[in-house]
Length: 327
Image 1 (cartoon, rainbow, N blue to C red):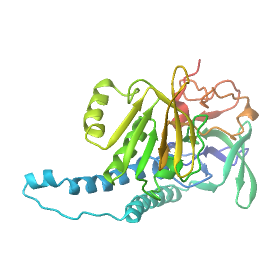
Image 2: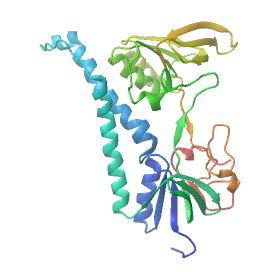
Image 3: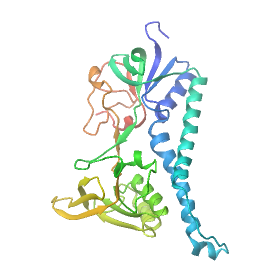
Image 4: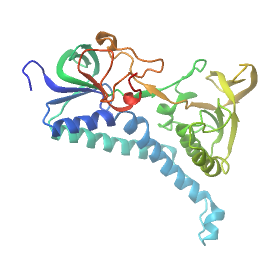
């Protein structure tokens, strides 16, 4: 490493992308530091894949044990199946905590410096980190941006985190509404519709496009419709947009025609999950300090080597941000 820099490589974001990059960097002999503003593991470990699959597994067992007709056909009799909502949520939380610890330990053992705080670019090959003890400036020969993603909330939808919330809050399973509307029929919406119906909730799925699961492969969508929607206590509204969503008791959802924007229906439900996708977490990264402009969705243009374009320095991109090819 050159004495001119604190590190060979600085990684901003300790999610799956940043963690994997750090492991590879150390194996390549680079002195490496990783910056994380929240907790190790990022979206996948803490607010996505891991906890959602844990909730799916637990709620799926409840569904299976309550299917008395199917069990009886195999000679099995089960009665009075119940569950503990808090214990199911704790199951997911404990799994997340273990993986967080394993990821942290793997970096510590390899000598990666873990810096807690919000990191932003401060110029070429330099970053400023807002740590709990104050601002810290770090230099590196190369910088990888791997800040992950955040939920996208469309205009007109007011989120209070209690009655109207995103998947980030839903994973905590703080309560189970009798009737919940889910805006969006992508994989996040489908996963939570499966969790909620297994635990006894009535679900209404709202999809802006004319058919459910519009981004799915058609054959997969057919299977999902047959297995995950048709047998469940799920009502669907396709071709309608949630023009406004107002938190409260009840939550008021104004549904409008996607094309004309004319009001079609008003739903009053107990809760609303906004599952309209995720966008890159590229705000407040100091990109303007190095001449980088994001597109309207927040993605950073990169070249075929995942290097940031429209700039002269040596700043690289990792993880979900590397989805927009350079033009």
